[in-house]
Length: 173
Image (cartoon, rainbow, N blue to C red; front, side):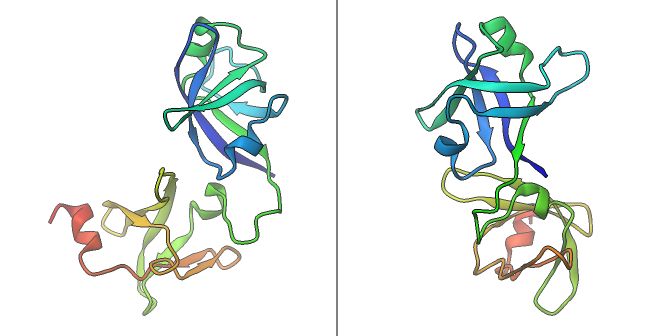
């Protein structure tokens, strides 16, 4: 199964480098030169079906990638918004991929439905689950064991023990 590992942002240099929004906790290992990724891009962009990493580096906290198939800034511009997918590995015992989490129904500890997980927001300091509450408001939940004590992928459920006021923040109260 392929999993999302990054989304390409804006071009960074004249030599085809692009910024990426990471969806992996091992960018140095994932983006080694020679690594290939399946792509998903908007129709008509001309993005190749696979991209091969030429270079990868962190610059001021942002990962920059260049690909063998993209020699210059013009080509890099066409990659904006492209999703990069890689084969799922089973070496992470206590981790989840965004594709595993999206669509899970969220419950509070008493069993009441809170909503549905719609995304995983990857942050420099902490990842957050994006939860669409039953009333349609989206709330970001710190993805830590104290607040998200149970993730049951086969049961398609997650338990969120939110601190008082967390959902009020999302509603602007």
